[in-house]
Length: 248
Length: 282
Image (cartoon, rainbow over all chains, first blue to last red; front, side):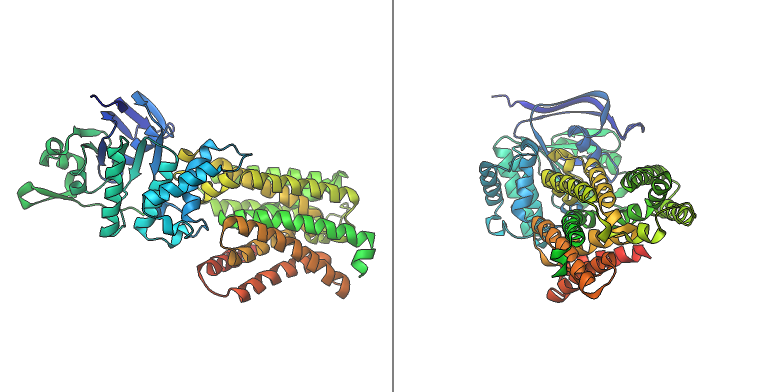
């Protein structure tokens, strides 16, 4: 059986307002049930790609087709951790877009939000304030919110950033389950070793450097093109570490 | 009690309770959006509009509304200039307009005294003032109720908000528009300087005490009304200025909230917000 194509781009270029394209020459296709690592340095175009897929910025060249509802799962520290909302409140936000301003959130949506929290292993923390959860738990709440959105495509921005190892394993297990039930996952990451774990890898550096299965794509040459001087090869080229310079 | 027998005081009481509720509820969102400085700025910068309305003999409410629109436009334009830091731009616009207002207000042709424009005239509220304040307060309350979910998403997670169907920039603009409405509604009774106390102090107190944002909004509305009631009673019993008494009562409630919950991250955050806001007053 051939899986349905969920995302397809051909020569995609996207820009912020009237600026020159921040990302160009992106051509890839993702089938239902595939997980794709989006790899690249800071400023390489990972966020730009996500914003283009969400329709938040202009596609100035090429084509983009998405055949399913799409949700964005941000890095947890991008949220206001001092804002007084519970884990359940955050999960319920996934139902807001389909709820008219003059209606209350339905009891069915409340049940969906509770089920989504249960699915990510956080039933007990439903009433806990979001800011009081650990980094890994917060990430799982944001994944639950995407499930409440009923999204077939999840765009995850550095989902393993700032989480401990046990949380990383838990999140990994959840993502595996979501992929197995046919959802598409695009996972922005700096971690080359992490990228090897998924079905496809898309390497970006202002433009598409490579796209394909990890074993074929993550070659020394591609990594050098993607990261330039920011990559360190270890174990005679069998392992690679990207050195990131964070700008604040 | 005298306050229950005098028609003058009854109108003042009704007006300040209604305004206190609207300003308190709106104040929570202003503080959550860290817009206390904008609240202070808009309140002060409408002074020229009030004075010009007084000179032209048109209702002060119209002058206040015009003043707010002009200042909001100037701040918007100044903030667009990348060469100027936005806080500096707001500071320059506010200082300039407040200074212009003071110069105009000191003109002998101005029938309404500067003190009334600065400190309001709560006891001078007419039935028409009361109706206008009530209508504007209902508008604010209705908008906050209708937009509660959008406000929550826009403040909590502005990065993901568009993917959840919320445009944070529009939400922020709507809150600033409601702020302008609140300031216009309250400035005649509480004055240009004191309206700020009702916007910030009840909200900061509620943020210390309440655990969810919905409860914070409801509690701030209640505290705002209570500050109005308490201030007016103190004013009537001790023969003190009404507007100033209301402002002091609002700050007193914040201090009381601090005593009830002296520590913890929520208390600290709310305390910082009020201190920053009061610092912006200087």
